[in-house]
Image (cartoon, rainbow, N blue to C red; front, side, top):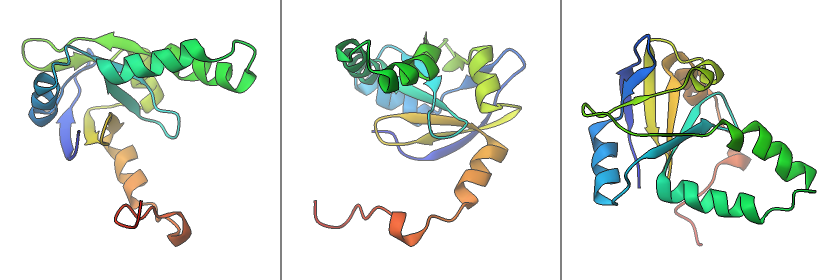
Length: 145
């Protein structure tokens, strides 16, 4: 599980450090790499551990090639995926197309989202967090399951 918010920088080549807490969680789970892809709900890069990516791939492979809604999502988001390894310094190289999608500039924010991680441009993250959630759309994680 990934939790927490971490401010980092991204260099001109598109390299940014994955937070130590996230690297440690990946190592503890025996996850050798992550997969980066467009996040479908807003302009961010979603980072998936290899095992979560493998689950997604199975669902994509089981989907009907005649289901237009599914295929549109595959085309738009799943096709943007890139498997990336961490370098010796714990950095990942974010491909140019994903940097452009998320508008990643100099300051970026890594956000733990449970099973996945999001990478935002700092200004976009701040705008997203500042948005109010209507009370009827707030999920009560502490209520009965």
